[in-house]
Image (cartoon, rainbow, N blue to C red; front, side, top):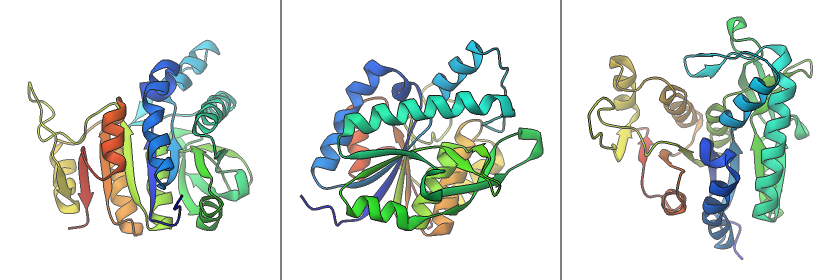
Length: 259
């Protein structure tokens, strides 16, 4: 099996990831891609499962600009949920390693904004760790928790982690979620997906509000990945195996490029 080709960073989140039955339906797309020799770094979120865990503990949570406000008492639940999800995905993939930013200091971060609590912004990615794992034939499965300079845990948006890792590895990045891509007009009765957007076009849509809510961190992470050296970013549907398979082979969704 050839595992010496280009690296693709994939961010997987949403209700498919956290629903065991639906996750089993989609995982074969990843297994097939890896079996054909694809070198993947899989970064995962876990929003619905995190919300369920916080509710069970009586911890209130809200969002600002698409980011979860994270009080210190929420971090234990977030780490536990992401660790469990990562282990389940890594086990299903086979030759894979579940990890987060603490492992080998692979992803470090700093407080993004005091208003958001323990929410971090990525400050460094140890690209060599990911390269070593890939060269050993292992697929990194990365939860979106990072350590700050004091060794404290920070909750980092998984889209941002994926974008930062892609930039550090000069890899294409695919954002899989519960949407088919970036819609041309999200308020339309039957919105259509834009197959391609340039960085300038994304900036224009952010400015006029056509890109809003939870899509904002996705495209911002895509733009960040491009600024850091990723050749392209793709926002695609992660709900069905066929869509995931297409995205992993450079098709479907919305491809975002520098020009």
